[in-house]
Length: 359
Image 1 (cartoon, rainbow, N blue to C red):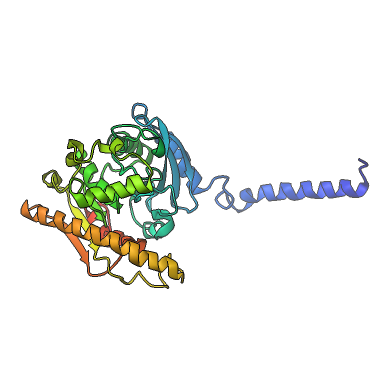
Image 2: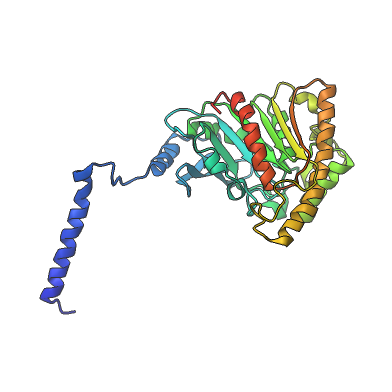
């Protein structure tokens, strides 16, 4: 290729411009054009601080798609695979903050039905002094320890072990937490949060359960679980807790084992299944689609009516045992995200107080 005088002049001009741009940070101050963003600096600090817990360890930390979001990957020793986590960081990362473990529903965040996609949690927690950690896996597992591997659900599932034994020490070291925790979940995870609290007393300072069915040893609760795991998850239900009506099903029934919840602040919510304020064509997620609205009102209404019945039984059981709990029985509402966002907002003062962090 022949180099002309014009091309040499152009190359010289480009070189001079590049040198000038490179010198700008020194002229205006290093903070203007820092080589790393605060989120990247946070990710590097997290990776440097993380300590392994046996074979469970932080694999990576990367900035998310918002300034206060991080994407962590933690390898689980019990499940022998990497688990992705969405993390919302506290308003002031220079100070220790508690951790809210916020669980997705049946899809485990592996589909579009996740807290991050369906609610305002990123902006809601933007000015809160708390870490919010959400596993983005665990579909149709009820976040419990399965007796047997299931090929339809990633094979080995030891979510109780991961969430109560393996993960918290890694999170505490990586994020520099206060060691104070709370736990909240929706729908199927509204069962899980009680069982996780029972499995590890004292780990969670408070529990929030939104539109869940606490019963697992009764026909209603068992039918609900069978639909979620068998029909939707295409998994073998007996791989989870063994034969239905077996001892493991009874051991995982928070209504039967309610005494083990004594001393843990509880916030429990449900609606009747009747159409409510978030069941309109203008509602978020409906976007004017009549078919979507009909599905939310009919299917979501039936599911919420079932969780309402379960929640009343839990309330009666706790009342019998004189175990205090805060119940929110809404007169209308379906099994859908608009109400769960409200539930999280409404329960936050209780969760924050339990974790000793400002509202």
